[in-house]
Length: 345
Length: 274
Image 1 (cartoon, rainbow over the protein chains, first blue to last red):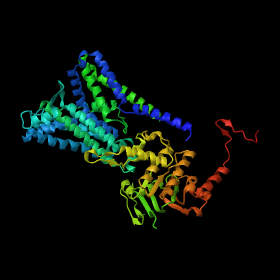
Image 2 (cartoon, each protein chain N blue to C red):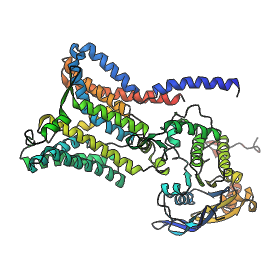
Image 3 (cartoon, rainbow over the protein chains, first blue to last red):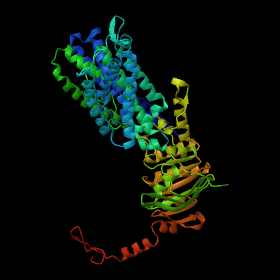
Image 4 (cartoon, chains in turn brown, purple):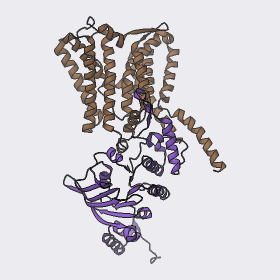
């Protein structure tokens, strides 16, 4: 090999190190999160207090728990618009089942898990069977669930909210699992933060270090190519929808156990927050690219903004504007970063 | 020795449309069988039957002497038939090493700690590509950043590595320039020398003639001819492929057609006028 080519190779190795750093999907989100954090540190005096940060983390976790599977699903090339109301459905099912059957709360929680997973399976099965866009399929599920939530709750409870299950057997232990507080280092933390971090860790492990992770990237980035080399495309997609359902179940149980009643109209609109978190975190709308950690950073940006506005004593009416602007900026930044990453080959 | 793949009078219908009728071909180890035909001749239907994406309706499909009906691409792969498609060979945004092992990822560990053997995947990808003459600086780069020819070569190297006995190539040179086509054909020949049976689908008789041992011509879903390399010359192959007598007719018409007097509003000045 000549000296010239050896030199060229050295230079390329050097460049590829840099590329690897800016090539990470979550980079744009991390930069954005740092900017938002600094901004509110200066704009709101109380923002940096431990109790404030704990509140921010809690707000982030409620979105983040769902943003993780939604990000995986988007990497797999699909959407789910039914996630927001599916969380409510999951809470309603466990609440009403336990109350009506006067069963242990854990029985209701189990029935809810099965029901929610069945809804996820339905989404995935319909998608792979009909080959319709996931936008349409899950929009249908979204509307149907919205109707069922309200209809069944009124039919069974007579009002738009469920009966309280706070005094029922098993409620206390269920609350410990899904909605308790922990004190770590003098700081009061919601247990959902642990759920969230655990989910991010598991999802990252699956995405980057397992066969299924490889398949998720492949079905989103090139379903036909994946099918041609023997990847079970349909099973992977159905599995992703069931993962979304599983996390909706966790979220739903948290919703129920934090209070002990559920409002049947809740959850509408949240599906977009999950998608926004995933997109800010670097997921491509077209699939095949993104990360679970990115979705967590996206959710954290959401938490900081929603609570930071309160700590800065601004009118929270402006929150949605900030969220929308952030989404646009993040998407532009991601597109720019990705183009740069691909140009330096 | 029985051929690796043998089709006898295979037909395929989509509803009342005849996509393929009475096609026979044999693929032997260490030989390249070229399937030639114009657009709509039934090449893709044939490839889909061999690759396990579709099932044939009539005729027999034998793999190493045993009759087969493949239900899925996975089943074809298990039988040693690997197909490399022109457009959808790889997933562009995924790194080269993930693409190389896609669908057949090696793992280590057990239970919940069963994980990809990333180091082995990276090293094997690099070594296998190097063996085929592609020196990648970085197997982590998205495969979409490679050239079209390199991508085809990665897909071929992948099939060879996973022990394919039969390699089906769908128009591997269609979108490539002259030089890159040459590179790809070199790998096709390398795969043949490694003892694989190759089916090369193409509409370029020049490329086919360079490497092919046997030529099957398709026309409107039916066989228009089957020749060994010593039975046919390139000129004749090109003529038959382009439609034989139809081509004669066309060249006849083109010769006789009077040139236009005016093009784009300006009179055409010929040598005679000058």
